[in-house]
Amino acid sequence: MTKVKNDDPGMKGQRSRNDNGKLRKKRGDTHIGKIEDEYGRDFDVRSDKHLNTFLDENNLNSLSELIESNLGK
Image (cartoon, rainbow, N blue to C red; front, side, top):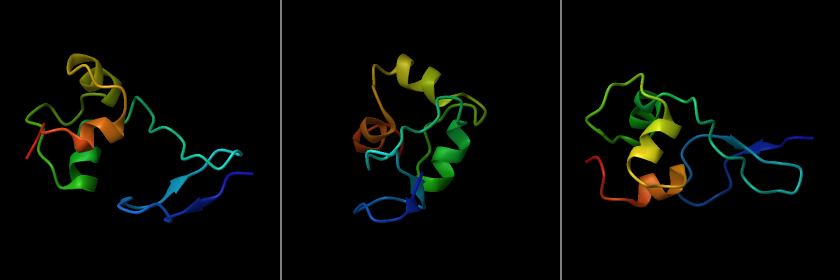
């Protein structure tokens, strides 16, 4: 059973959890434009670029690392 709630400090919106309680990873085919909208950031790339592609290009492993980085203001 997947639970959806906003119980993680600093989490934007609702993210579902895996059965073990950990937050699921953001889908790699999520468009950067969606991430920019959710987090109020501008990464200065096409809005239809996929998250996985952007992470690979910037040597990042996860959405969390991206949000904590200095990329996009």
